Amino acid sequence: MTLDEEALERLRKRVLAGGAEKYHAANAGKGKLFARERVALLVDDGSFVEDGLYANALSDGLPADGVVTGQATVAGRPVCLMANDSTVKAGSWGARTVEKIIRSIERAYQTGVPMIYLVDSAGARITDQVDLFPGRRGAGRIFWNQVRASGSIPQVCALFGPSAAGGAYIPAFCDVVAMVDGNASMYLGSDRMVQMVTGEKTTLEEMGGASVHTRESGVGHFLCETEAEALDTVKRYLSYLPDNWTGQPPAAVPTDAPSTVDLAALVPASERQAFDMRRYARGLLDDGSFFEIQALWAKELTIGFGRLAGEVVGVVANNSMFKGGVLFVDSADKATRFIQLCDAFNVPLLFLSDVPGFMVGAAVEKEGIIRHGAKMITAVAEATVPKICVVVRKAYGAGLYAMAGPGFDPDATIALPTAKIAVMGAEAAVNAVYANKIAAIADDEERAAFVAAKRAEYERDIDIVRLASELVVDAIVEPHELRAELIRRFAAARGKERHFSRRRHGVTPV
Ligand SMILES: CCC(=O)SCCNC(=O)CCNC(=O)[C@H](O)C(C)(C)COP(=O)(O)OP(=O)(O)OC[C@H]1O[C@@H](n2cnc3c(N)ncnc32)[C@H](O)[C@@H]1OP(=O)(O)O
Image (tube, rainbow, N blue to C red):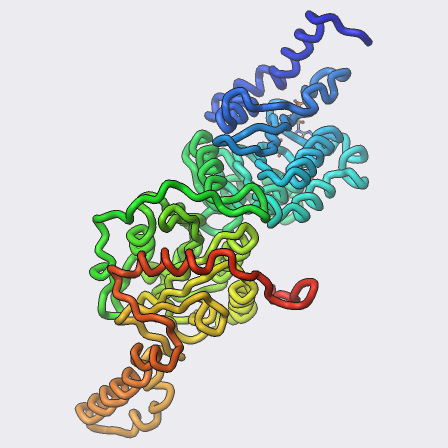
């Protein structure tokens, strides 16, 4: 078939318009943009080069087979991308959709550039399953490629609509997922399927909406009000990462820390009083540079990127505002993945410790707190990027190990003058050792005096100067000197030898 210029232009226009008008109207009614508008908002003007525009050009009704793929630049840096077009069979994957997505990931991996997934899809196109589902270049190959690319190139997803069944794994294999509140959802079986299989009556929003995944399951990382916000989040995320695992995170023009935060005043003397470690991190980092990830999930642990004198660091911090900063199953998982992300992309790690330890009790034991904690400690041990542990207030029990304490090959363990490092807090320790003796003292005053004396003895034992004199901590630093100290120490650790163990990979507790 030969085409004259006009016919080609007609065909191109038809394909660029996507699916039926009723689906465009339905999307607009929900505040959803067209896939091509999303791409235009994401990439630098005029930078997009599209592949596979004419997929299915000979069969009517499935323009581009429901996915836009190609290469572009974002903030001047190269990326590969895919964007589901939900006006074409609800963005479901036909054979060519799958091939286009596979080629995109392969190109991103081979050229060492980030892969961006703009997802809005019904998953596998059930009516075409033999062509797209089981074969060597079937849908499974998308995931195989995602797993191969994981930690080699950044993979980031913005989710605008459903990502049903197999489609839900694309976000799951990404480093992070930004979800648009009210429209985005992820689930393995639709509400109709759930009712058929289990009898449960639910909705897509209830089961797999943005709020559920960013607050409860942890599969989503950012809850966004609008599509534009989700796309900005993708751009901001990429601004902290190199193009691939061989590069260094891009430095920015250094700024001062905000002058409004008094770090010393922020930490209450009493361990029983909570303070917001996010404010502490903001006060320590370059002004406006803190970019929190998974802010709504497992809030007892805060993670995110920031900058010190323009250089990127990954922050892992206990937050006593939530559950006293104790580590739970979800917070251990949250930390594990973030530490692996930073280690993969050469982002130095800053641990801000104020941790009473891991949670104890029947409920968390049944949830597997031991293996989740072991997973976090494994990630800390395996991370070979520069890592510095700052004991801001306390590091008790295995919490010290989870926060990159001295045994975990940190480049430095720094303590504030009021910091405490111990196997447990004084109250718990005295109770553990002297419970029988305390119970045997009948007189209230005498009992109180005994407990106070034992606590004082314990506090003397774990005195921070004593720990420094025994080389447990490398430095005791005043809060107002901490930022400058960290800048110097991270600079000194840059470029260090990175090797952990002689083996293919460990057998990780999961
Ligand atoms: C790897 C294994 C897998 O991925 S199995 C995939 C399983 N997927 C599903 O069960 C999702 C089924 N689809 C849905 O639940 C809905 O379509 C969702 C995604 C919620 C979107 O709803 P809504 O925006 O109202 O669209 P709609 O249902 O009116 O559909 C529009 C047109 O698309 C079609 N469609 C939808 N999903 C599929 C699919 N998975 N395979 C084939 N076709 C699909 C609908 O039939 C409809 O087509 P038409 O325009 O009427 O011709």
